Image (cartoon, rainbow, N blue to C red; front, side, top):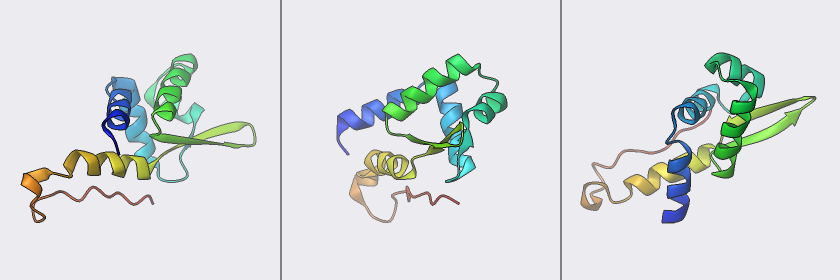
Length: 107
């Protein structure tokens, strides 16, 4: 990962609604959630939700897929783990025994 990608991803979740959306999708697992359920759960209006989902998608932190007439969104675990690895790669002056393990396996 390069610094520009890290900045794009960090800036995309540096907003309350987008961080809540991303965390909800991380919890949802690989299946993800339809946009309507995300909006209902977090009480975000559809037009505002669409904007936030677009920003997260542009940063590469979420994926989308269409199932029938619904669009399902899911966390991009590879991108999330890549960002965590980038942030912690020189942790504790590079000592291997103190670095956190930035890996999340979707359910």
